[in-house]
Every structure is written in structure tokens, then in C-alpha cells.
Length: 169
Image (cartoon, rainbow, N blue to C red; front, side):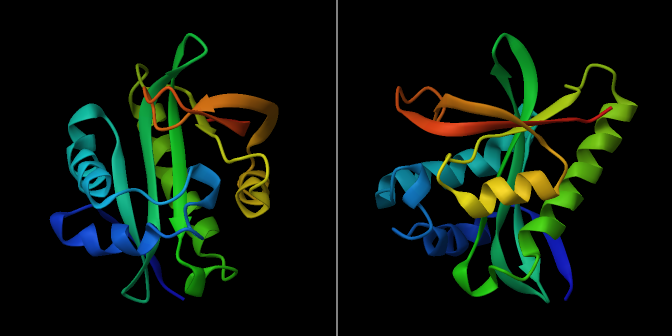
């Protein structure tokens, strides 16, 4: 199985629509409206100018999901945050683990090359999202316990999440 990451592009709106289902979005408040989805797609395209990136996850050339990282403030410090989605037909095959390892490698290289880059990566899966919490553990994150996490950022809506963190240096 060949798992590759490609930076988000205009052609990936269809992938975002495939992710926007009740099943896939159950831990983050449910599906978004078409208007909200288009705004999300535009934010994904603009993210590199803000120091982050969204990737399409490809398995043997087929779109299998997405993974991202970006900078944010968390408890008074600048950190990297990551999150991912794997379509149901690709789940249970190690796709998220491979994509997570690739993102970790890129962020560790960035942290080593740039002392101003945040030295820690956080992930905030819902406390009841067992697969994502297990993935964090497999990737070597430390469980920082439950927290109230605003998602989307600046929305005023808080989710009960687990604060996983991992040193990049």
C-alpha cells in the first residue's frame, strides 16, 4: 500500500464533500452546509500562507482522506495542531498512521531547521473518538487529559476533547 500526501488544491473540493457526512463528522458537530464547506475549502487553500498545510491523503493514487497541521495559540503558547479524516473504505488499514508519521517527519524537520517554529504538536480528538485517540497513542503523543476545545477556532462552540501533545525537538 502506497500512502502519499499531496498539498490541498482546488480539485479536492469533491474529497471534502465526501468527508462531509454524518458518519465522518459525528465527533465534530455534524456535516456542514454547502456554503460552510466552500468556505472551509477556501481556508484550506489559504492555509500555506498562514504557516500550515492541508494534505489530501492518497492510497495507491486514490483519495482516502485528509490530514493537516497549522499553528495556533493553546494555553498561552504557539503550538502546531493536527487533525485528520480517513474515508470509511480506507479505515483500519494503517492509512492514518502512515499519514500521521509523514506529517510528524515534516514538522520535526521544520522544528530542527527553524528555532522559531513551535516545538510541540497537539491533537484534539473528541474524548469518545476511540480510533483517533488510539492513533495519537500509536504516534507517540502524550495524553494530557480531557479539555474543552473550541472547534472550529473562533466559533464559540466547544467540544469535549483529549489534549494529546508531542515534542517535535
